[in-house]
Length: 114
Length: 141
Ligand SMILES: Nc1ncnc2c1ncn2[C@@H]1O[C@H](COP(=O)(O)OP(=O)(O)OP(=O)(O)O)[C@@H](O)[C@H]1O
Ligand SMILES: [Mg+2]
Image 1 (cartoon, rainbow over the protein chains, first blue to last red):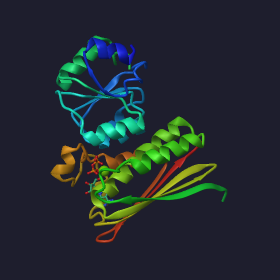
Image 2: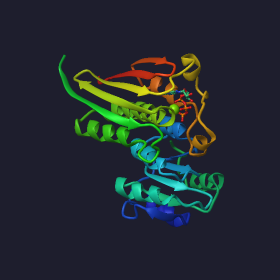
Image 3: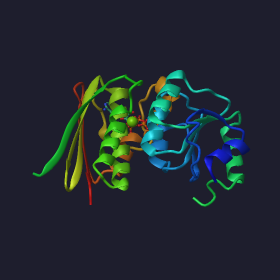
Image 4: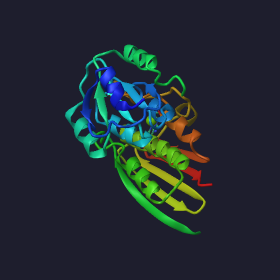
């Protein structure tokens, strides 16, 4: 499924990268520990997290993640948004908790085959 | 030795704002050099974790990248507190990260073990009150 479709169905807010959503999603990884994401996330995945500070951008770049989805209605810091724009990282947000968002993604079939 | 690339990067302790810059720069460079994606992935993990450890624990440090036709070597040197017990520091889950660092998602205690896991050769040396040195080698073929 394409990222743009998921955004529509799950009513996600697009914070950065609005011109970069026509991409196929290759599963996801949920974690708030950066070293865990560095070790275990795969390229092309969605990263579901509560972290909002600027260091999440470098993690997404290094792992070539498709998008960061910030949960619980949190907003990224201004410098995070700034850096994400510079580096071409897509940041989305959701009012749902990580658990609920992952459940909904899974219902859509995201990650079932990965 | 048929070295075709060598460069040293500076990394500042406590500079969380620019943290990850050196690693992402190295990643871009390796892509430009046409290094295979699976090799780049390993180098990126090792560089990022080494860079973050300097940012988190040391005063200042350098990362030296040496590439030849066979391997990528990363030498990481810092001026900092050093590591008391290296065996303990290498254990997954061990961390002395502060509460502020943990709040930002650091301190899983996974950095050093993952550097080792992604290296073909790995050496760590440290002296208390002086600093820490990592030698990471990843073969290209
Ligand atoms: N360059 C260094 N200088 C001083 N101490 C270090 C250095 N690198 C690692 N350490 C010590 O070793 C411990 C383990 O390091 P490691 O990178 O595995 O985990 P971490 O940095 O605590 O957490 P994570 O990397 O998962 O965010 C650190 O908590 C710290 O006490
Ligand atoms: Mg670390």
